[in-house]
Image: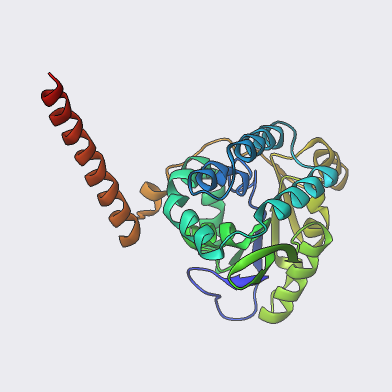
Length: 274
């Protein structure tokens, strides 16, 4: 359930900053955001893609309480049964920047940079699947990722969940990571948008709510937790100086060459038909 990020962990001890992902670092559901890419990759039907798009709309408008998250968990678990793990990873790798770049909050990236400058480990704690969260964490340069993990047999998902990073399970995973790396949780920071992450925020000494739903805003007011508003998307590749991976460049070259060949064929075909 916990993996190292692009930079690996710093020396043991000190404090850490724990970030929820959806609507905290990025503006939408990270898993549902890939529904179109999964459709184009042949993993889901058009009907499932449209259903995911509707779920994305509902998530964006009203957030996700416990009941909605449970419905989403059951739906996505059933949907992913039989998918090839390698295919999912390839689709995410090839479309990551196109999909995620426009959704990342500039304010979140700034906070991540501030915590890293203060020698704190940065950890993403997300209910989304590790296949989606880990590449995002690598792109952002975080130290660890805590995410939902599916059961895999013979390279394919069974539809069962090995670890569900949701609600109190997030808090348990944070405590375990802190024990492993010697984090002082009383000196650590937490950021989330949803009332379902109250257990996660209660674990750290410096909880913050980001674009909170109404229930979490009430809790923040009652407990005196700072409320942050993130509104500005950022072109992450330009800001961080990220260049496409060689694999992505190869894909772009192939696509461009194929498109060029189609255009040439169309011109020649029209001339023959004239």
